[in-house]
Amino acid sequence: MSDEHTNSNGEVDSDDAAEPEEAVESEDGHPSLVLVLAGVAGFGILIGTGALIGVEAYTVDWDGEVELVSEGETVETFSVVHADTQSEKESGLGGVSELEAGTGMLFLHDEMRTFTYAMPRMEFDIDILFIDDSCVIQAVHEADAPTGNETGVEPHHQYRGV
Image 1: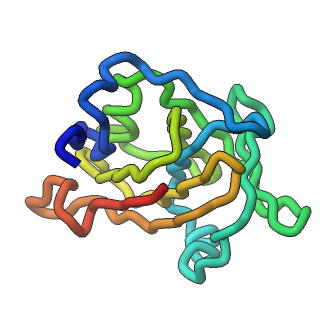
Image 2: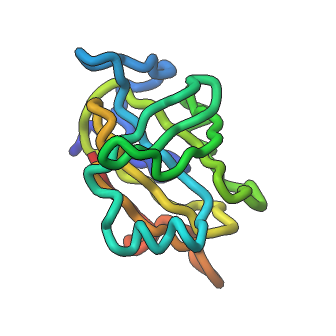
């Protein structure tokens, strides 16, 4: 991975990714996604059991909603803001003091590959969902905010997924 580095949000970037990424859709019209959500107690229980792996995540309203669907039934709908530009991706939710339950940030990527997200400047716990270009959740992480003198980029604050 000599051509990749980790930006200030902990996301792995290629050196040639200086330009903001455009969302590239798969054959069925969906980009690759990473969804970062507020740590919600009830939602955390679902995540802790691994129950969301394989659940479908659809952008219901590209301007701000993602719907999680399992076996044709809506599990949850989240209001999201998009991190579209490189600058937005690098800052992520770092420095934000709180995130309301049922809200999150959506990161779009132009290709399916492994990304690593970390927790620099995070002031609260979040849930990170990696969603493939078929809109199926492939990985779910309960990410704890750094404490004490941690920077948020320590190995236990790094979360990987495709």
